[in-house]
Amino acid sequence: MHTPSGRFQPSTRLCLSISDFHPKSFNPAWEVSTILLGLQSFMTSDEMTTGSINGSDAERRRFAATSKWWNSTGGGSTKKEIPGVSGSNAKGVGNVKAGDGGQKFRKEWGELDEENWRWMKEHRVDPKTGVVVPDPNAPVSCAPGADALRRRPAGSGVGGGNATDAVVEGAQQAAEVGGNWFANHKMLTALAVLFAYTVIARILKV
View 1 (cartoon, helix red, strand yellow):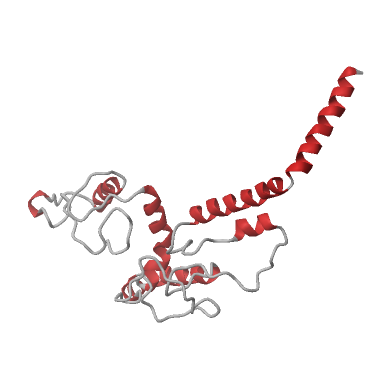
View 2 (cartoon, helix red, strand yellow):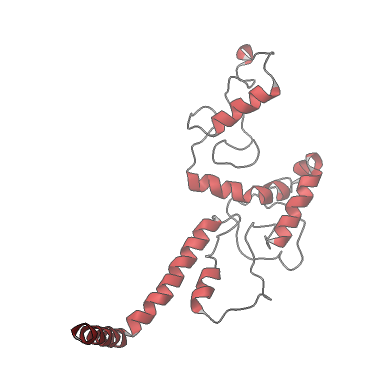
């Protein structure tokens, strides 16, 4: 397994009954589907063996989200650029400078590689870092809450954290924007509550 997954050590031999670690246990009668089902079962379990790791769910989701970028750029070692996106000064998490630039993946999976590059261009993913580069021509909202939700923390997104983290932090920032209004207008809020209470009390007495 060459792509980081949070379950296997990349480019490391796996000690499994279906691998060449145990040639005597291999059964020639096994079909390809049997071997793939065995691998799938091992990937979704917590069983440990040589060549495996036990990453957290968040780490596995992050690796899954960055797999397109990783495979087609060799972990950021590519020389290929995306106009208007490449050139970010941000540093990608897990950035590999000694990779093959995605040549092996491109040779074996040409159509999938082209699809990955289209995806990176559409989502403005910097090939060198895996970081999502904001569009400078995107319309800016006047609502501070909306701006907070749109903002992505440094290093988030592809390669630097998962999108869930960015959304959660953005939601927290938006909540803080709303909370700050009440904090800055305590007197006004208290008077409004008192007025509403007085009106309701008079109506009920009538």
